[in-house]
Image (cartoon, rainbow over all chains, first blue to last red):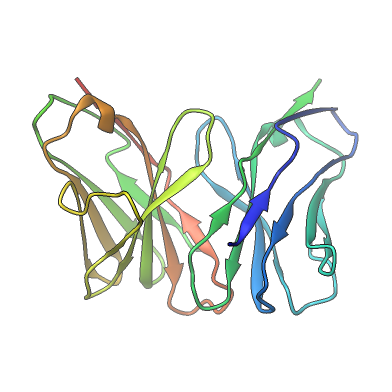
Length: 114
Length: 117
């Protein structure tokens, strides 16, 4: 069975500093996508970043970047220059290409401290 | 782009009544929509996958007669909670996958908080 594991239930970081959220997954598939979503207190799920498994280059979106280690089945999210607005629940998600269904991790609650 | 709306954002109803929640993709066509349920401080639980023009596919343990899903057009899916009971109180979230998107990305609505008295 495919699984997604987020081992850090809660984290905190000082404003302007860098934090890394971890995510590991288990699959025997070769073609898949990985995502990080942010859910702030409003509870709106917002796409932060996505990674196609066939791409070796790590995805980046402004202050957000990933460290995708396919062999290790690891997909961590790095947030640079953390801002108060980054305070949210972060979910890692996995989907096998063509199935469209997501498997979510249990989430990491991130708090950015002023 | 890729905006999904949900209506209503909050609903309170009496036990035994039915409640309809709408999910719309505003600026894209969605061949597939998904309905999730989220309990406080927990992850999203997939309830069903809704494909335009065909019957929804329900996840194991989800009662299809209780949670009726209709995906009548490429921009609208509805979830009807029939004969609601207090245990159905939850946060319901829909998402949509664009017909044009080859990356399997889901875009989420803002959610609907259902309270059954």
